[in-house]
Image 1 (cartoon, rainbow, N blue to C red):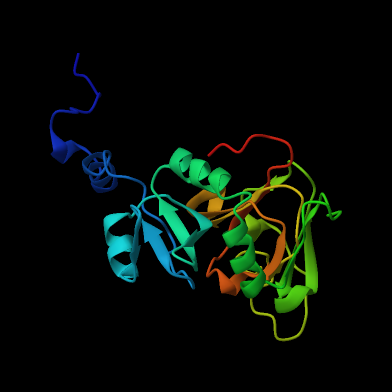
Image 2 (tube, one colour; image 1 turned 135 degrees about the vertical axis):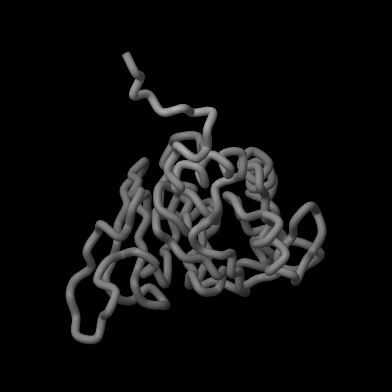
Length: 216
């Protein structure tokens, strides 16, 4: 009795799409959106201005956190999330980073100052516009599914890539350029309000970590 099972040893019997996926199975997942930072970037401990090279050499997930590098506010980029978290935790109480942030953000709070537990994001700069609020330990894996209020002149009526400013939050949070917390993920571990454009990130997914230990 003849078998109807396809011969997996013969590539010609496989679909073109499957063949392409099979050939690329060992390659890292490619980001949907390129890395477009607005601050200097530190990668492998070195400051680089060649962002095109970073996008070519690191096509998969990238993990970003603000750092102080030689008296300059910069973004440290890592292909390994644990290395990024270690760097972010090491900068948590760094006085130089705090001073640099005060010069680049809308406002920072001292540790003794009360701060909100919720994460408030706005669709306009300087904490104006419509608010997207995330309570502690809340997450939104796909912001394109979340509608914004309809206004005349708005082409993008969802929250996908619509965050323009962020208010200070007591907890760390992260925004990712692609859906499902992938792509370029910015991890924010400081109590400052800022315009998203000052760090050069876009957000298609977002998470308020609350008291949970950050894991990526």
